[in-house]
Amino acid sequence: MNVRINPMSDADSTFKDRNVNRENAAEIIAIDFFKSMNIGYIRYGFDEKFQRVDSRQWWKIPEVIRSAPDFIAFGRTVAFVEAKGYKKELKIKINDLVSYEHWNRILPLFLFVRNFDNSNQYYLKWDNVKSIIYGCDTEKYNNGKTYFILPENELVILNNEKKKTNS
Image 1 (cartoon, rainbow, N blue to C red):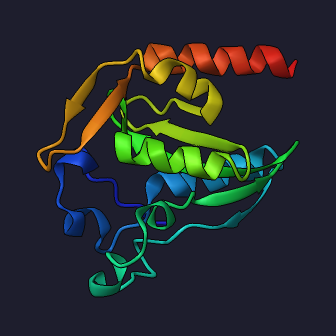
Image 2: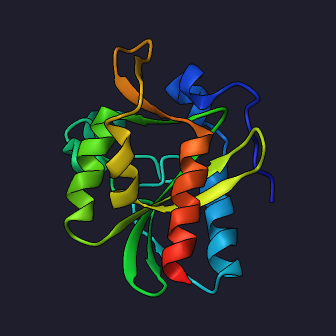
């Protein structure tokens, strides 16, 4: 399987550079995680890499629908899963936070996140992420969108708390 991982952060790339002839590495690794944990899954959200929607149509779709989670997973419970890759620190846009809240009201939402700097990965319940996110620093991308910065040490703590409650 050829997954092209751009050495520069996707956040610093153009939409075209992020999406042309590339697989979503975080989604591929999430699938491997599901298989290793015997978690059933189906793809759910838009596949921006291979099943592109014409841009004239794309912007007519409400943002919350465009931001549908990547998977529905069948583990201990049925849940939505959003797969996100990052370098250094996880960044969650305010726009995404609003969408995550919408989807979390339908089914529990989990984030599968993978740090491509050190290969650490976490499977986090959105409600737990939300409990710390408002205390995190914020910055803005060049396009003006504001995002929260979730440092790696916070993800480790959330992941360890999840393991304690599952034992």
